[in-house]
Amino acid sequence: MKVTRLAGAAASVAVVALAGCAPTTGGATTTSTTPPGHVAGLTENRFCAGPVSPSGCTTAFTPASDQVTVSRGTVLFQKLQSASNGAFNIDLAPGTYNIEASTTAVGGAADCPVVPVTITAGTTVAVTVQCTIELP
Image (cartoon, rainbow, N blue to C red; front, side, top):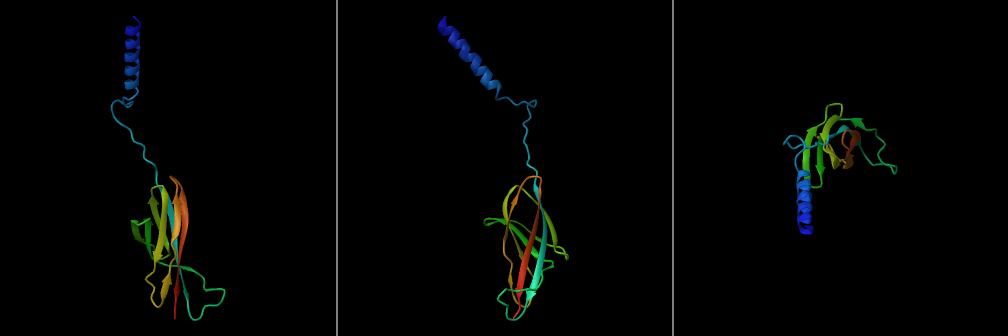
């Protein structure tokens, strides 16, 4: 009798364990999607001419239309053009990205540092990407 009860108990446990694996939505599987985060960005340029003072270029940055690149490591996610007022907007999945501008301004070498940004679901991150164009 003990063997029968043990077998019956094991069968009951197996049925309960399998019942826990069944879908709970009437046979349809559910997937949760994480909402994206949002980048509200601005590109700005400044032009520095002649010898730069020991304190660096003192010319103010002004909004400009630049090419914006969004990447993660070596993977390019998106390229876009900021508006004439420098504004750009993009939705991204949560994670850490690099945002970089490249300018079409001519006359000198451009220095546009990469701006790392961490995106969290459902939030907006303000980012300013700046380029310094060094004129001869």
